Amino acid sequence: MNVSQKGTDINMKRKTDKITAIVPCYNEQEVLEYFYEEFHAVMEKMTDTEFELLFINDGSSDRTQEKIEELANRDSCIRYISFSRNFGKEAAIYAGLEHATGDYVAVMDADLQDPPSLLPEMYDAIINEGYDSVATRRVTRKGEPRIRSFFARRFYAIMDKISQTDMVDGARDYRLMNRKFVDALLRLKEYNRFSKGLYGWVGFRTKWLEYENVERAAGETKWSFWGLFRYSIEGIVAFSTAPLVLASLVGLIFCLIAFVFLVFIIVRRLVFGDPVDGWASIVSIILFLGGLQLLCIGILGQYLAKMYLEAKNRPVYLVGKTNIDQPEQTENKEQTETAKNRS
Ligand code: UDP
Ligand code: MG
Image (tube, rainbow, N blue to C red; front, side):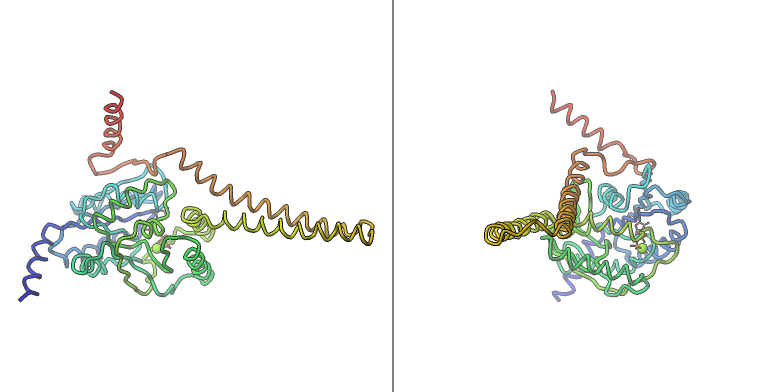
């Protein structure tokens, strides 16, 4: 009896729920049609919920924008924000979170590597099991270049050790969150956004769903090896100060070694009166230490550069075109607020 009562409660609750799906798109013209088909199938299955499909066109240079507008004409639940240039997936996710109007918000790739068919299960976990977000992780990396998998795994292993936030190997950006979670993410205003870390940082209760890697439905990956390498440095700098500690530690160890050497050389000179020799060893020591110093300065520079970017306080993205009515509203609101504060 209890169960059926609970069931009706849930049904009543579901009627008012709205799910926003944020889909960052960068040159995805080939895949959008398939994506929409699959998403539409899910919408038809989840009849008790309202949907908003929010495409973020991240400065695509192909016909992605036309494709999105074509879909938007077909289906009124489709909204889009088109950036003035390519700002990166992280900026696209942020823009989506800012504009999502749903009670629950999902972030998913356009290439169907994040299967929309998982949505009902994710939604169920939030509604019935009391989680604040449901995240996904792929347990295999099938179809991915070996070397990429290898470095990706190393990255997660290192990150997990050196940062305080949880980093999960194989975690995707695909997740469904409730309002509380989304609002918490929006309070993190940083310019260098590393979503996988931000998700972990805000905490709350997260359920992990596992699935086998799915290959891209069409089109090509936007990540070069070099691009991923830079992204991983960004992740480390954004979520850990361990490299700075390491640099200081190495410096300290070398000071100690140098001190022992100094004592050794002075004693040798006084006791045995050895003439100067061994310029080769001196040159290699100087070169080694010089390199080490540059490396440490480089590490420092990474943090300084990020601080510089944060200090500039530039917007994370700029909107070129959208079918949401208030693209400048936030700016206007800020202006009126500062005017109010001044007066
Ligand atoms: N993407 C984006 N801006 C970028 C690069 C990628 O919005 O600068 C989007 C892309 O359209 C896709 C998602 O991010 O929806 C994931 O990109 P991709 O499939 O190339 O990455 P992979 O799955 O290979 O890691
Ligand atoms: Mg992909």
